[in-house]
Length: 479
Ligand code: GAL
Image (cartoon, rainbow, N blue to C red; front, side, top):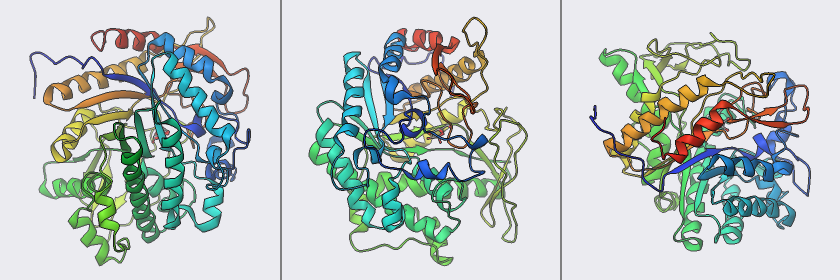
């Protein structure tokens, strides 16, 4: 679809930026916080780039006022951040840790004073270790009640201050990395267990939304899904079918449940055949159906391109690129279903992520036609090496170029008919990239630290900071 003239961004469009507790806060054991599974996982030798952890991260816990002042200077309309469950309930349940909840209330008050809309993510992967130890975390149905209690505590406390809520961040990522690839906690490689844990996460998500309706009837809530729209490698019908398999297994498997409370038929049938289907108990379907979101949150980084894969295909374990040395792409996939190929039409980042702004529009269009839900882009951004110049500047023109092209596609998508609530870049300040250390930077604000040295954690506005400020000020006119 080409448009001679594009629609304007709505006046109340949420120009935002995002972060996650473990990646920015630090203060990992302060003010009564309990240990999370990430606090421990990063300590296993060889898991993270140069053994980095989030003990200090970028010290947002102590510097949130300085960070919010920078957001205000930029004119940010929304800030998405996550709450660390083990700050609120150090043991995952029981008594509320007042100091923990107070931190978030202070942060929210600071944002509101500057007219910045808080978007609160309830779960961005840092499960209290106590719940992992007690019953295996997401593998036990006990977590449904505990997660609900935690969410309800936050809903009640913050209901007059927070309108936008995100339930689970990238359930597809934390479940598949946690239980299939073993690259995230709890480091399991077992597909049957993965599908069971995923089903329980779906139930927890739905129950939290159900509770939300009672406590904050006028608020908005939805999950953040890591959506990588699937492309066919060629017009060969076998490739087209492979791409359809990938779309159903990798995306509809989650988004159908969020939106309609049902699993896509062909995937379910396949899993039943291979004895991997999740256990459905009485009441599950009704609960899933009761957990419909107000919007689909989308974390978009790249598309994925697929070709057919025969039943007897064997894949080597993909070596992931955690050091920014380009050229690590390994074909991987699911025998009999699909195999991922490099898309030669696209450039990649130094971490081998394909850069595809049009893919964002395609993804938003697919969500709109399949689910008819409004969309909130909860993450999108470029992880790159940045260089701090002598005169305290960072000339990140590549980041400006990346975000500009994605915003252009947002505007096209709006013109196509997508109901888009907002756009949160990843990220506002530089932060810890889970397994990739600190050198993979995403922020508008440079944080002067590296893997080995925390230095002063000085904040430096990058060139993109001033650029995004102008984008916001002109409501997307000045790109
Ligand atoms: C997402 C995740 C974020 C951030 C981002 C960029 O998968 O939600 O926490 O790490 O990727 O790497």
